[in-house]
Image (cartoon, rainbow, N blue to C red; front, top):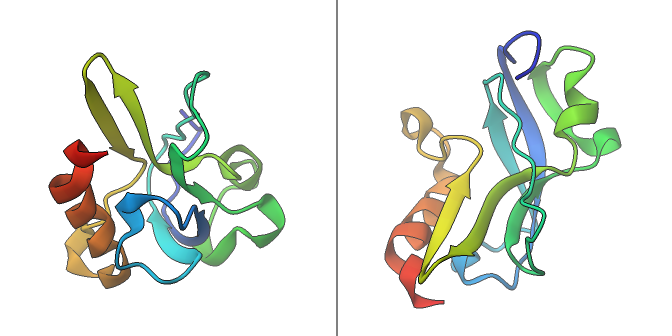
Length: 121
């Protein structure tokens, strides 16, 4: 965990536009909300195409809001949305809540695709 929680910042994320989880999403860059003390790292055995959405590089990360000085370096290029095989199933993970207060309309397709298409690829 970070030394302090990110009080709320809008950051840029970049998408792997070939993933079925991005059906209906037409932009390669998405604004996402960060308000947590957790930063997820990709599993060591993550295959190509499984890191569906990653936070942008440090130089292009923050769009709005405040982040503690050490946050951009630790957050940059870590996964926001990823998928990985576990046994006979698949885990789809979000580093944040794409449905937070129903304000992030551009992220709603990501959640819907995870629920509806998650078992089909």
